[in-house]
Length: 126
Image (cartoon, rainbow, N blue to C red):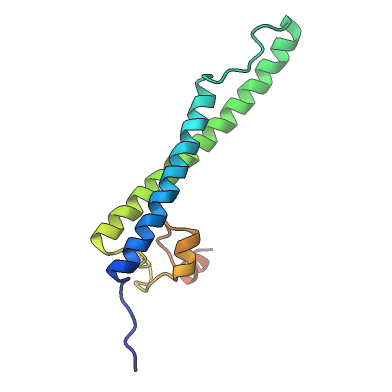
């Protein structure tokens, strides 16, 4: 009878590390774009248009800036979660469900590399 694995092998952890670093790079690029949009460094505003149109655009601009700020905050949280996953890889605790203590399936980790819960534990929360 085969013993159930309690952690991923070093080579498997190395594969996940590559995946997470790729996701981290993409996420950081996205965050930089969002922050650029917030700081108006890519300004395509209404500075040179008429007063009435400008007032209507300002309201739309505020809503849009709030949405972009929320997206940026979510992206920062995602980046933080990816960094935490890298720490777990270094500690060799990556891929272990924090509720059940069992390994999270590889398929799930490839889709959600910062996951800390197995599907079973996640479903039990609902």
